[in-house]
Image (cartoon, rainbow, N blue to C red; front, side):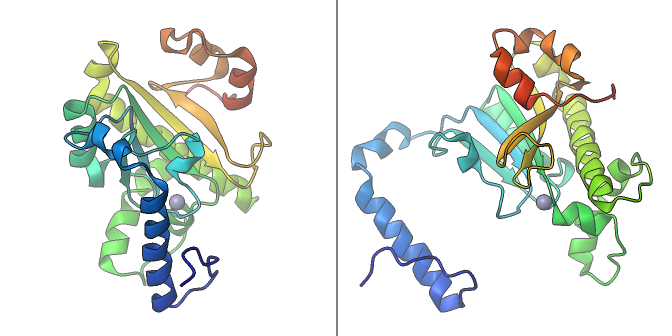
Length: 234
Ligand SMILES: [Zn+2]
């Protein structure tokens, strides 16, 4: 038995099943069982992360072990309303100091919401309908790639806006920061593939305005230049 077979790009159910359980077996054998004791009785996340289900976007991009650190809520188009109970749990019960709302480049849900999706199942239609309000703010553009990215950004802003309405008191008490960003695996922002570009912090957009926020103080200057995206005010 090969404990770590190469991943198949188009696996059958049989192959996918093996990948999961063989992979998990490798994980179990590689871990010191004592590592699990720290969170055996409770979880200790520092981030509540609302993101899209897209397989190209993953909490591994933070480069720390996400186990016991990220409380992840996912749906197509990283939408707050279909998942508000789960997010309430992260903010009010687990008290994570960060709510990261993370869209991504080339988001299929956003693209579908920009198109005619009447032939989808009612369940998919219902979830895509939630993206209509943010897309209303997009200007018409000839360049579909630009229009698509613009729609991704407007959706992130809209979701941050909803989150500020819901958790603004926690933000104002200095116990929470709400970050809206785009994970860019396609390098559409030119900051390097895999970069998270920050659009919106606590409902504030624009580099200078974000740099002036108390929560951004002591942030590395060079990294600020890389991650902050200059935009018009919201
Ligand atoms: Zn997506």
